[in-house]
Image 1 (spheres, rainbow, N blue to C red):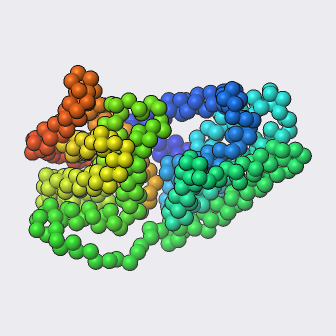
Image 2: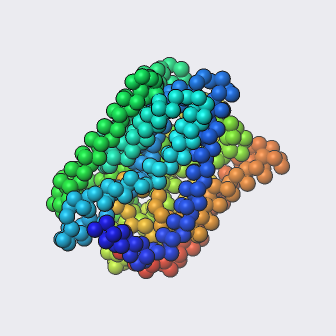
Image 3: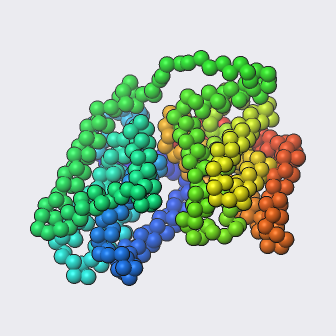
Length: 493
């Protein structure tokens, strides 16, 4: 049975219309995985000696102190990026397969996920170093098994929390606040959590306490299996959830004609769907990205050129998270739209105005960055001008090549998708992020700092002046890619 499931997955990969894109993405992911493996190996081998040399205390105790944040970040990354163990279940429901076999295979696949075994490249060498440094081998092994059990528990906890935003996001906010309180020295949560992880090592009962995470892992495995087996029905767990319809007219937009109609559809889409709501939340979080620059928390960001980089991201959160997936937001009814007498210009203009409004709002909200000085907020304002005058066109242009159908009922892949990667979209990233840095650096170092800001702002103003020409070019690209996009939206896997 397992061999048959593997065979189906293999055929699905090679027979997909996006096979070339998938293959290129897989190759890229292999290199990314190798990079993270090397980083984790270096940390696993060197962290013991780095902590000891810095005089921070017992390296094992230091790791145990902050491992709570390690586990929370791991759970957060899983929730955002890890695919759920769903193996095209709907086509298999009417075939002679036992539900338990399908569920076992789907859950078993997650065990071999990169999100699980990549942690071994840190904890295995770290544990070996501990034993080599005369730590009790039995205690180290018990501690190691307990931590790995908690990591695998995250895997099944993520499965149980899938789409449970009401539970997940409040927990993340609470832990983020606790981290902020600890960073400022007001409250240290690790005082209470570190002894728990220390108990997995401390003799004589450490190895016994280490069995508790293993028991938790076993309970989560059983709960996950029962949950998926119970909900494997089209009218149950696999059914699309429906909510009560509400009338939202937005009649004040009627004055803008067809443009107003598109704007109303976009506003309704954002308000009614989980994926679009997640995008709005992510774009709001982009505003706080500038804290890494203004507070000096990251030393590499202290250069003057990086202020523009921060300004573009702080003001352009919605632009990057929403704009890059135009027209994929409308993928569920895009074929119907293309059968109507709809002008691409009006359709693209509605998206552009939405992006501009969101950019202006983000810039106004980020006014609190004046606390770090007027120059830092000036970089945000200049970045917003560049986003409106240049990057707004580039994200719409790049959207023509990102043929990724979006499931509006799910917030998975909220940061992106494998089909969003191709040579054209990567090339368009250069003028989005690199070009403004070059322009600013030229004005900053060749003339004076103010000239750098003026040069970037003028680039955005020039882009706004040539708006009509830019839209004509983008419209031609969308028309050229029209039928490729329609074909891609038929691919559900």
